Image 1 (cartoon, rainbow, N blue to C red):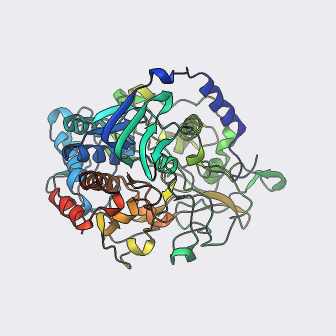
Image 2: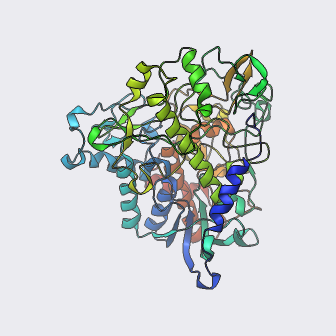
Image 3: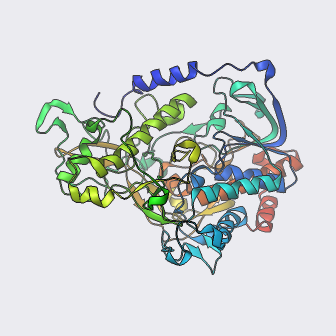
Length: 556
């Protein structure tokens, strides 16, 4: 099979259905019904802040955890925080980063290196462990998870493990959700619901309108949306032949390479920016687990890597951004790296449309791709010895994710569904060219999209989709109307992650610190709506603003 724009590979579907067949059926009669004022679906960072805020405002709260581990990407390897400007941190988001800072003040926190040996570097200017602001912008995953666990326990949040049953979805009365149904038959009933999933699953189950893919630039008067043409950054070197047998078109295109870009620059499409896992690696022998060749390894999957090296690429196969205790946040970098480009969608499917079992299987393919990438640059004879030696020292951190083979629990779902509400955040709002008069949080990070596909351009393989437009660290407001659905669709749901935004604006808003901010603001609005016995759309903004400021949220 050549090209990305295909249906989900049959092998994945067969494995997914086989996995489902092995799951024992649970009697609905034995299922449990959980009830609270506020139900939060999603155990990521913004789900935690939403649940904690609602509990601190005196409401009973259920937090539904899909993974059994709190924190989402913040505790799954994204320890090199994407933020843009610390000024946006307030309330619970600042509390989290402050707690992380306090942890590293303890001598016992430094197990694998001395505090004075830590580089203390962060993304952007300033110190990772900042004594002036008392914030930590880099941290180990297990530390992040422990902080989230503590916040939830201290707040008295009821934590249950479960996943939305895609077949049964939700029960609604008019335009209000009354109950969400979980796999195995359990139910979670509430007055207000918050969808803190990365996929927007609860939102979709409730019948709320959403978007997937990239808009035309012309739709909202943007410049960074739609097809990018040949990406300017994270690009492959020139000279990579696109055919399985170099120079022979009759041999077919390399797997994962499309014949053309599939559209003109600025033209919208169905494509999603690539996902990856943020690997946590170490070069400390006492804490290092060597990366072994994954089962089913096929060197043909790395042909573009080999040809990139032959074309002159000598490094940049994965980042080694240092966190405390000699661990990395290893993210994508360069033209071929951790991103499994074009493998999270096809012509008639994408990550969001898959079942839970299908997502697990596709996640495993992403995992094996990355493990195979590391093994290849460390061991394969087609990789020059100098490169192999340079990368040989890295292995998985033994004391992270011990129940998951030292591999992160969450894949980085950079983008899936985005709600389509009465207000859509756009590039011009992020650039402060258009005002936001009802802010409930702020963003400041670069307008950032990873590549979406590989295609043939002038006889060479090139990447398409990467956008990195800097905003100069200037914070912008995020509208309350962008986190609530249209009132006729649902009156008691808030969506702090898969919010109403264009693809390129979402590229900035989607950062984890902002998710924490919006999770807290969503919960505040939910509690006010309960007190006033009204819909989330009719919550008086001035009353909401007053409470946000009282809780030290930074909204201007």
